Image (tube, rainbow, N blue to C red):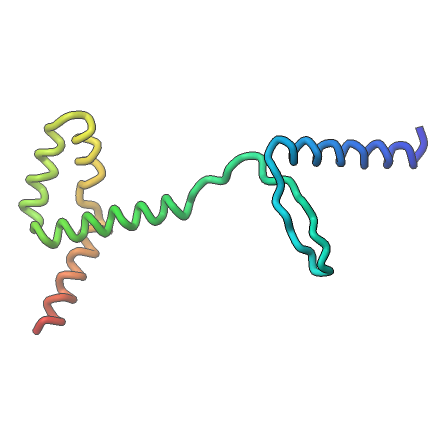
Length: 119
């Protein structure tokens, strides 16, 4: 097999793989800098939603901070203990709602900031 035949076979293989990916996963259209519209295959596996996970984590911490500021540390601890004595789902909620370092620090600083702002 000569050089031209091997490069031709490699190109055919690449085109066939691209075709298979396009038919299996769909295409996305892209406009190149010269104005040419090119159909490229979509990614095979969906990406992990890091942004959604980060927003959910921030929302959970924000909710915990507001609850801790509103109820106070003693009542909040009692409510979390009540959850810990409940069903499996309530125990999972108690695990998520337990006071961590970030929640405690944020609640303390936000409470101090609000008190100084209201003076």
